[in-house]
Length: 198
Image 1: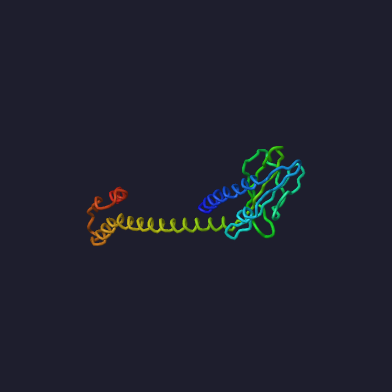
Image 2: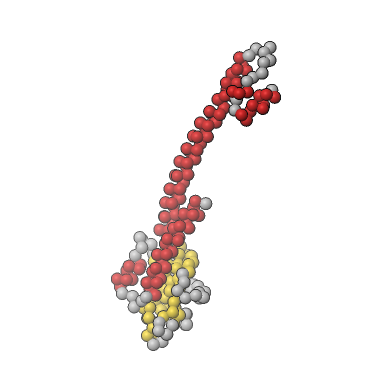
């Protein structure tokens, strides 16, 4: 459960960052007559592709023809065309022994409203690292809580059973001829009925 929660939080945070990259790419796509053009300055491209040692790939596909307009690497099979514009979609894909999380959206390029699919994919090393860090912190916290709880339970059981030890000592000191009842008031309330019955 802790792993699933940690993975979910890491995925949510990094998905938002990747979708921001998709929107940034969309801002640099334009239509010239009947052609789709990508006007991405080199500085913006370097910024887009730099991410803590992860491999980041992008692809822009003209949905009218299925042709790739711009890309810096393979992102697998083009997904089914999303039904809504400017909405975030995500998928996982395995390529070249690497695991990618891909953010994508359908975008209409003004002024002719040509549909394009914009994708940005990133390997999942950072996500996995964040998940492991959250998980290890959670396990440490839970282990501490369990140790404290065990300490309290151990101490509580010892205090709860102390009166029974007194009764045990009293019974052990009696002679076999002493049939006087033991005093149940020295015992925890849960066992007083048992002492009375004995």
